[in-house]
Amino acid sequence: MAFLPRCATRKGLCAWPSTRQLCLRKNLLYGFMSFLSMPFKTLRGIPCLSDNYAYLLHDVDTGTVGVVDPSEAVPVIDALTRTNRNLTYILNTHHHYDHTGGNLELKEMYGAKVIGSGIDTDRIPGIDIVLNDGDKWMFAGHEVLVIETPGHTRGCVSLLDPIT
Image (cartoon, rainbow, N blue to C red):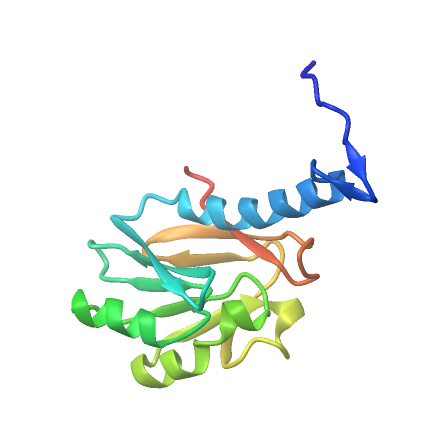
């Protein structure tokens, strides 16, 4: 059994994250990392806002390009222009603006389909494809399983390729 030091508190501040904070971080990372474990040919992080990243996924075999959680459109457009690619899908893991802020501009410019959780249907700008827990969806020739992973928000979703 691993030893975890006790939290040293000073005026109510704690240097170690609480169990709740650890679970929240696990849920957020699980959703994103499960999707990134899919065998794509290229994956590229794109800095957005001052402290976020959107992620471009590109499958060379099918030509499918998706962007995960585009908080703003301009950096994504720049990356797509530099690589001469067209956007196919906009994937949102939850409804917060720092994950959906670029949806409408990217959708209008590329005709990409916006995908997100059924729980967040009214909150994700421009949503076209609604995915619910247990749904299976095809992305770049891979059958992806949709798993609701509430934690950060009630509508958080993770996308899992069961093969990887």
